Length: 183
View 1 (spheres, rainbow, N blue to C red):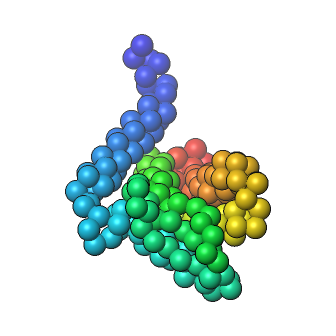
View 2: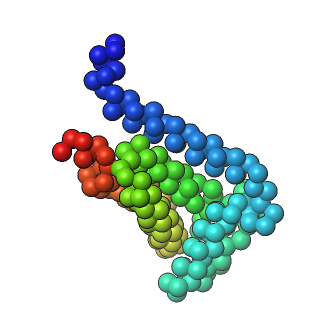
């Protein structure tokens, strides 16, 4: 058993680091959501911010967009040209995806500076692509409401998770210590 552990030490270290960082960040985020009362920023600050920024981007693309708190659930209603097209819920704010991204990068950490800068730049990129994803999804739902299932459950998750996967692969191949150790 000891020989097996030694043989796969780097794999075990990766898994334990990934899970530790993921659970710590997820619990921290859950704590934040639990203490967020929604009085100033409904339903929470990040979801509210994403909804408002999506509204601004839709307006920039020539759509008359409006976001308003949903009266029956913790979400923001996204309305285009007086037509309700989508709800912006907590899962739309990209925080959970960013937590997943950070956990992986830390588990394959390189030098502190490059790891830190990659986490910051990757998180900003994920956030920005997520905003663009919401805007394109909203326009798609406005123009093609009968394509809701394929747009929301297949195409747009593929965009965000595909980009995260590409960021991970770039990180592992360019900056992580594992790559340097195996070179």
